[in-house]
Image 1 (cartoon, rainbow, N blue to C red):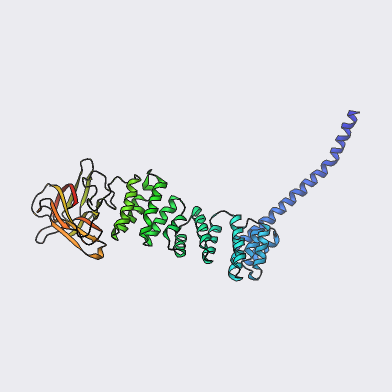
Image 2: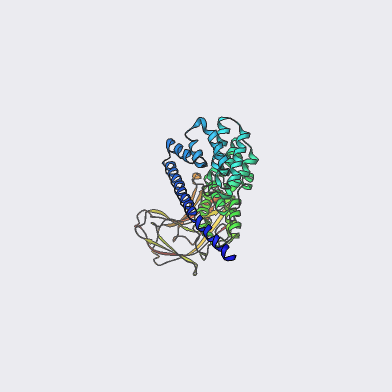
Length: 415
């Protein structure tokens, strides 16, 4: 009995095998045809003209991308095509945005546009829907929603954040409210500090730099703009004569371990007067100013600076400088120690004090470095910040100085 059943099953299988082969061939042909159809539609779509995209949409009518693209060439059918696109693909956030723009701008329907924009944000959590909502709420003058979505856009933006910052300052002049909407992303904080510097909103910068330093810590601060962006901001604020904000930034840099230099004050304005900390070259520290004037070599372990005048330097140039906070009208005493390999008479080196900003045009000059006793007393100019500089000016009747001067210390104190 069992053998008979097996035999019948074998005959049945043999009978079906040709049919199965035919079905497999038909399915393969159908799949190949469908693949060719899809390839043809994709080729037509890539040509990106109205006629070709329309042909692609006819070949594959359920492709939301083809339908959405066709809407760009058919303004009278635009909304219908876009609605068809999102019906085919609810995750088509760009079509939701286009529907929102059409509803807002052409139909003047802000409530309906908002629903479309929010659908786009729900479908896609990346930058564009968030930025679209930020702009929408800015146009609608809804500050609470605007700042919420501006924060969301800044949380993930891969682009420059300046357009968002600019809108924030157009929406509100309240620096604290804007700061509350800035996310705690080091890259965004640094961009915001630079934006504020360019916008001359100096009072808002110290808190941003402080937050940046807290967020980053003191591991490799040069990677987070210490030596270029932050340093440039600090120098710009000092050039403006803004002592309070410059000192606030300097204090944050010191407290966060980004610099080792001390914090100056109007009683003791000079930092790094023993020359043992490598020059930061910005802010309240020494900076060699003009490489064509001299070669300045700091010997940190010995606490000295070698200044070599080549003999072909310009007739007037700045050798070394440092911004210092001063109390206007107060008497100060600068003292220094030098050593020279060639003590021959006047060399043209002298200390200068210039008020910041330079439009004040107030300058005080010491006697020649080697004609003096290593001390100079002066009354501070009418500014909160000044630039103390060691400068070379060729005296009349003398050839250009050549030789090496070693500056061993400098100190500045209020009387």
